[in-house]
Length: 491
Image (cartoon, rainbow, N blue to C red; front, side, top):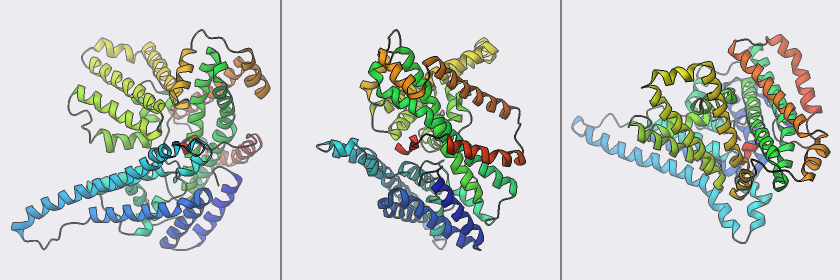
């Protein structure tokens, strides 16, 4: 049951009927929990027990971390008891982080490595996706964030049902957005109330937008990307540039489409999930890109890795080291191929260069004035997007042999005569310039959306109601015969 799909639509409709008809907050939480288990069981039933064990483990550790000292301790022993309890809490926190981290590393890296010895079909074939519990990366990151927040002083969750409903909440379970517990729990304090009509329309509009992004655009671009990557040795320089550009668009539309469906589904249930994208391809610096791309992951990396490492508080050199370490961790999180490490290193290097340029700008008004001028802003946007899209080569081709081949053929290489015939004409009935124009049109539409947001303009909810059937109809009729799984399901 993958969203968006007809089956998911029926599932969501039944959940909404039960959820809003049955009275009481506790009952609604049970509906959320059971429906989430049904949703996950439809994908990987074998891992439902594992997810439940993880929920119980993190709930229990959080409860202990949030337990205050006994107020009846005599004053003369209070300081000693406080220091002892703080040491125990620190060890317990590290135990919780290690348990979550090692489980993720075990499924994502160690198990595939072990199976690779003599079991290549299991390690690289269709069974490989069966071995990795979907959503485990996002699940463990949320658990680590919860434990750290409680350790830092936020209240621990008192009820296992509430914590379970949060952790297994089906709209965000597989690919986020990464949602912190206390943000979610704050929406429960006032009770679960029926959303107003405008919020229901906005939820449906997000689901429709996600369906259009995913089924109508990203999956069609994905056909071009997969065919081009599958024929990489025959591709020319122009073909590789087009592949890189197309993949960047596919990844953004695919992932942001998923998040739109997740946020829309949650909105219909009375919850607001955090935004995860804000037109990242219109960023004018790599730092701004990471404030707009996969925003909840960027927030997690800042709060639970960059700041604990010292952030920018310990001088310029240490700041640069911290930036590189954070981005290397981000690369490792995405996969066990060297290409992901290179991708992280590219972004780390770009962030360091940006940080150094900021330091220079603080001493040179002329330098700052140039980058704030119209030519400077345009140049900054071009350089930022060149870095971002260049790094996508290693993201799409994490095997360094494939990425190396693409890099060697980036300039001055002619394509095999059969490449255009097989990839462009037979599959799409178009040539490369025509496909480039279509992708350019997608970017133009994104640009219009960015301009509309900047002007703070928005469609009224009655207009959205009129457009909803059209969006769903187009996504259903014009989608490829077989929908592709979400790219971030692999991470």
